[in-house]
Length: 336
Ligand SMILES: O=P(O)(O)OC[C@H]1O[C@](O)(COP(=O)(O)O)[C@@H](O)[C@@H]1O
Ligand SMILES: [Mg+2]
Ligand SMILES: [Mg+2]
Image 1: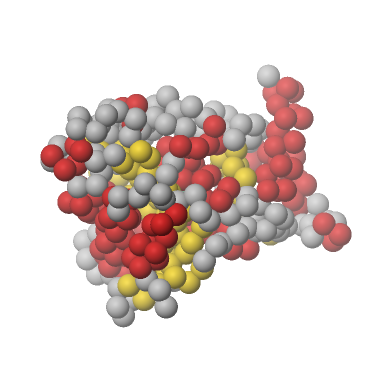
Image 2 (image 1 turned 90 degrees about the horizontal axis):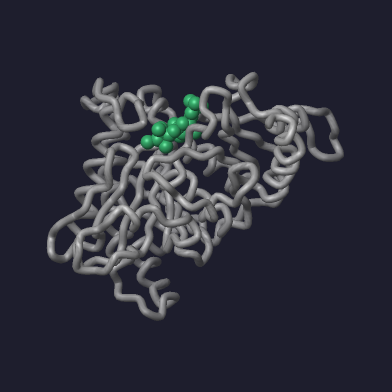
């Protein structure tokens, strides 16, 4: 069995100008994931459950585990000195690391330290999402906002950790999608899913149907399409919604399916954040043979304007995303 650390080093040859910095950076993420995993596993026994009473820049009340995970990932990335700055769901502004080694580093990280916060207290699987870019500002100076506001197609690596019945780390560096399962007895991630691919078609749709009345017509039409009885096309599909993007995404990646968080009347831009939720998942799904858009535009072609901007998100099996995109186009003119 090959460990995550060994696999990353083994694959380093895929990058002709590799210096080992990205390898070190991924090592820091691996370490922080283990620390957070240990805390999550004993969540009911330690003071990590519940809210802090403080709101983040998105107006959401931060959970204790949101902050814990944020601190652990930030500390691990800063300690390794391979990152000049991070942007996080739990930080209003990006954080620039000012040690000499960090300032010289060529990478920035964007992260959702704890995804699926509404599921923390009820023992339902949650995750961490990360996205890595090469900075565009010169090394040797503090990071700047532009280093973080890059379109998704410029990512050099992206991934997530899912803290579920088993803990897995799934990542891509643009050479396929690979999954590693943590052996809890050793605290070591071993390669368990190499070259993950998503089927072009699936029978699972993931969406919060509680918002149905507020959905765009194209999405309503697609849900009707999913629920129609037509055995030749495996319909009706099955509805599955965990309420943690990482967990819904992971299931759909393995089995085929589509995850949709559309715009709604009350949230015209949807809920999910472009830079540290949608872009990394879009990079992974495209590397696995799937598709991700905002219903019209490829997610990774969207030019970011703000750190915490939201976008509607349609992601999963290629043919399923193409079908709902057709319906979005067909009915979008009606809604204008
Ligand atoms: O409860 P809703 O509105 O369906 O939203 C659920 C979605 O919101 C999220 O929890 C947002 O992520 P955070 O928990 O990181 O804020 C996603 O993981 C999930 O898919
Ligand atoms: Mg999230
Ligand atoms: Mg979060």
